[in-house]
Picture 1 (tube, rainbow over the protein chains, first blue to last red):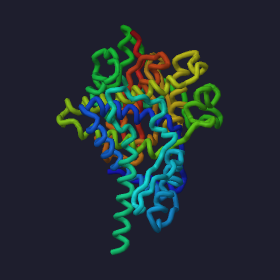
Picture 2 (picture 1 turned 180 degrees about the vertical axis):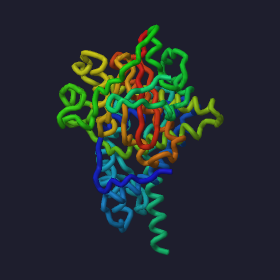
Picture 3 (picture 1 turned 180 degrees about the horizontal axis):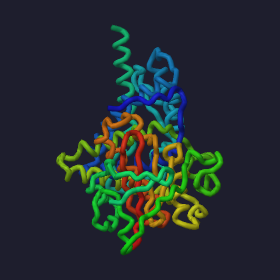
Length: 151
Length: 252
């Protein structure tokens, strides 16, 4: 149903406040709809995934980033190009596993949580879980692309 | 049924467009506005008084013509004080607009899928949930405006603020036109509404369009609410991606 609008490499920016506020309203609504935090977390991840699989197309079309040769490069692109482009922040990359297949992204200034306070009864809510879903969706698409290219 | 007279051509137009379903007007997640019991169609401005003359709809402003010899709108500053705040200029962090568009689409999909009742009753709930979320966001946006912005001289100024500054902050463009009958009803027209652009153009997916407008209706209603104006906002789509938002001021 959706059709990619042809925007070329031009990017339009808005104040991240609107995004933050909308996200907050969404999480609030999900907390009302689902009885426990675990379900909300799952829902956020799922929604993020759906966003991620489309976001990656937008990213590839606009960023002119070439193929990453290894996972470390991927991490760099995510933190320094993608996050910068979409959220205006650059998280830091730390905590590499010995095998080099796992790392952590630390967001010092997460725009999603601006002005947000979690009440005590939502201690297991992963507020920013949408981001996890987005990353998961986007990376899964890349992996699929890679497979296709190799066949 | 009230006929809208186009001031430019004098031609009258029948209300043959699709409106948000009647139900969407009635239940809101936010404080429910007191509906005068009329249906989804155009709120008749005649409800206020008794015998009413034919209302002249004045085209208050054609957004795209601003700055080029003016339009119907008396010259005013292009942006008000609150604009920097809303637009994120002046050192505030910027996000890519695509994120908001994708998030909005996902929200519509999510809230639609959730509802077990696919009939008109179910639709009503989903639309009002989306509208309620927009309302909260609109309120919060309004609350972030500096005090000076709130000193509007009259109601029309508030609507112009919505059309120029708020619309530019949220959708990176101004509303294309604003019409009013000076009796508390305003029609805001956007000829290429960003949240509808990706969908299609023309008549395809007309059925789906209301879902994509509910949040924005709430946003307008919420911002107006913070600015001290109680209203009812509905939207209609004749052909994507153009749509009209109808704001009816509720005077209690």
